[in-house]
Length: 399
Image 1: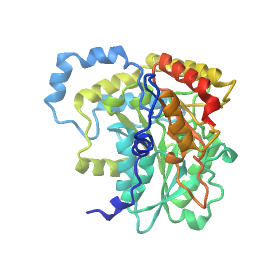
Image 2: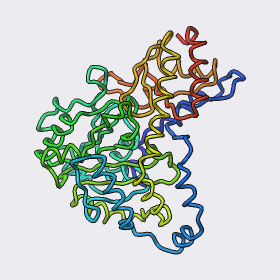
Image 3: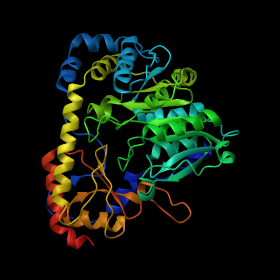
């Protein structure tokens, strides 16, 4: 048995279930703001296409190509080239469809890590726990960079010494950030790319929230965009991951991509061919349609903006909180410790949230998620608003 399995931490939602187990709640219907699972309706034009018999017949009768159908790779390239100018991604060598970002963000560490020569895998803290699990099961040691208010909730790479960089194989970044929605600027990403070229580590950029942002005229900068603007048109040492789960409300389709350095893509494809990671043909064809359409994405963004605005304005008199630059999360401080707050809120109002400390690790006595919670505004607007009203009515009892 792989001994690294014993190094894995319990998943945040398992810890949440244990925390809330046996808690007596109010009679009000349960509202979950804990899990970031999109619940807006899937685009109707994709549902209509998926229900057509010819698509299913063809898709189920064919072994899917791991590299992806040319039409899907071209659609992804079209999206990247339009959304992340001046990046121009070659659909033949620089794009690989994956079964959602989760499995690919995990698998890339298994394919590209070298635990003997590069024993460290760097990641933000707090973080998406897949990064940590990927690092541990690849036989490397996670190196956590705190993301606190003092750093704008972004990792500070300027304090890392050349000696440490020489031991780093992969650097995970999440941009926009989960759980706080912070954005790395063009210059910050370019500085990291320069370090990657100098020290020969790989940047793994999780960009699955890139299409949910506050300012319609100022979308988040992507890693490939930053690389191309720097003159690194081949995206050396850069891999960007994105998904249709948040962008298009299709978490069940399990469809995303990795794009970037052709050499790294080729090795990842080789790994995935053995891993059995091919996306079903009908899913690939639906995915191509989704990547090519922006209307449904604009409508999706507008819904999230409206929910965030209504939620924060309702709570402003009792619990002011910052509006994120991107993503559908809120990351407020709690008046008491995050576990106690979560349990009391569940008991008083039957509303569940996620303790921030469950998304972070304690390093040198500090946990950057402590005394914060993550609120995921993924439910229908009426449910989000009802949750806000309940929290407001009982907030004095939550301290």
